[in-house]
Length: 312
Image 1 (tube, helix red, strand yellow):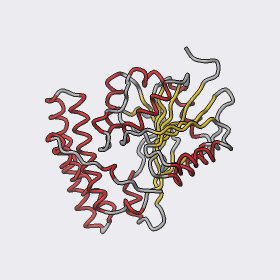
Image 2: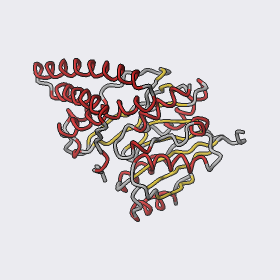
Image 3: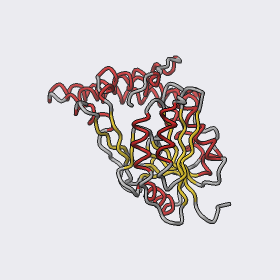
Image 4: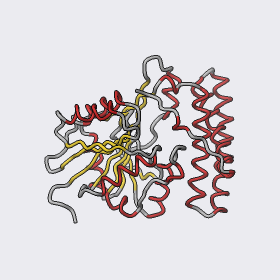
């Protein structure tokens, strides 16, 4: 039963990034929502550092919204995300936002825009895109490559979404619980897998223009990092479909996608060489590594991308 005053919770998971968390919290407490909506913020720290708690306490003193802090001792992005959901479900809040600690909303009505779109279309999930900006000294080619151009338009239906800019209704999280699979704890792709589960459960997701900004650190701006990320994403793609589809269906679909990624990867590599465009060339390599990862996923190979923390 919905309470008289609608409530919404913004969830953040963080690990060894107190400065970036502070920047995000400072932006979030500037959010402007309708007077009828009670907004609160939930921080789950996967490291349990005093510096992170100090940041939360500092911002909480001047925040118009309640900020709650929890330490999740089980290491892994999945455990932190699930802790957010667990704490959220203990409340009577109707909606949960996810935003990453290396991001901040582009506008002060970010939260309200997502809520408005949810109410307008009567859907359970609303997502938007991420705009990447580089840390000092980050090369342009890497910034352009990380997300590419946003091709979605207002009101588009989406099947796949991620937790870097997301609004989810309580009904989704009550039905799919726990939402994030522990088998993806250190490998990434748990949000892709969650999106597949939502799709199979019949929940509808749409896009709205309410972007967040992400700082892309210089330490990630290497060809090697992109190749590893492509390989990891391919593995996560295959594992997600193996967990949710029959083996035959997953095999056929993943092999088809492997072919597409190889062809596109080769095409981008050739185009990048001809035009001397590093972004295009590395994009091609990324797709080829993703194809290799898609095959590797059938053999139980994993790549633990989140062992290294980038940022501050």
